[in-house]
Length: 450
Image 1 (cartoon, rainbow, N blue to C red):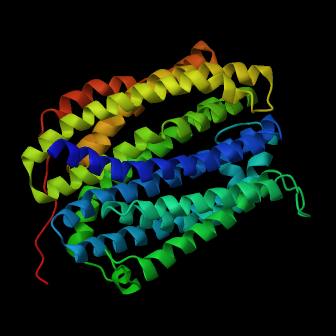
Image 2 (image 1 turned 90 degrees about the vertical axis):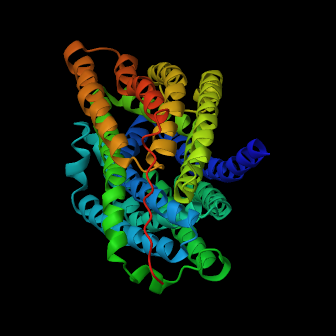
Image 3 (image 1 turned 135 degrees about the horizontal axis):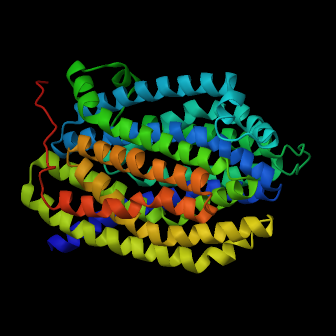
């Protein structure tokens, strides 16, 4: 009975998150395919622009993860007011971050894109896209925090529904604005940015409408967002800051990786863009299960049920590993067929095929170590450990090794890419040892008089 209840809850939480991630990444894949029809320069320009946006995305993901780590435990002990306070804190931080990134990207676009490549044509394409896409930052940040808020209380279906609406709208608008259909001008990469902006506006409005008129579990009001509990602010930064910083550093790591790849030529940039986009769609199950696990472990930690935590963590590790093997096999099988959809050079196709082969192996490590460390260890309260572990592997191993292989040795793109992804396998040993010690379980909640 316990087994059925556990897997049923994991399924109920994970499946909508997985489908939401499928839709979210399918937007990126569709953009990639449609822009790919414009050639390598268009793909490369948008890819470089997205390296900046990735830092903001990881920052917001960190805010959302920090919210879940803390709020899920309060929800586990049925303290709804504290959950709403934590959501308000997260929203204020997210809006401030969106404002900062908007100012930096809108006014200093050329300077930032020049960090990733010297190719003036690629930069020119990236600037056209960035000047519009930066207007989506506020909408994106608020929507993602609200989505995390609903996830931490177990309401995962609304985010899926809103993503479906956003996806189909984005694809339709891409068709109109990129290629100039239905009387609209053919805007190319700028058209993709306009389509994304309109889709984000609609998605944002869906979240606001749902929280105001439909949701009954959370009952979040605007006054709840304005109210601030200083004790919870302190706890949010104490336990949430390592989570946010970890995801920000990971975003910077991806941006640095983009800078390394950006020096390898337009063919390599386009190939990495294709490989990463396809990988994102294939690996949605991995990230969906990790997100669902964080809610389950967080609620159990809030309840203070150590026996439940031990049983859950054992089962989840097996699920993570199985998910990684399935994702790797699927990516390896479909890679050649996906590449037929792209209008790019034979050299780009050959590089992308090699990169996806690498990813079909490293995704197994990603599925186990990432899910274990973020879905169990971090969700259980050991937020500092995951941060330190990432710093050591990324900045002391991955980046130095990749720089040497790319610029000192002059290795092929797939070798450099393998070095950039090697931590996904190496971290598995650390994850397996840490999670099975159970010293990561920490109760983060406090008692408040109402």
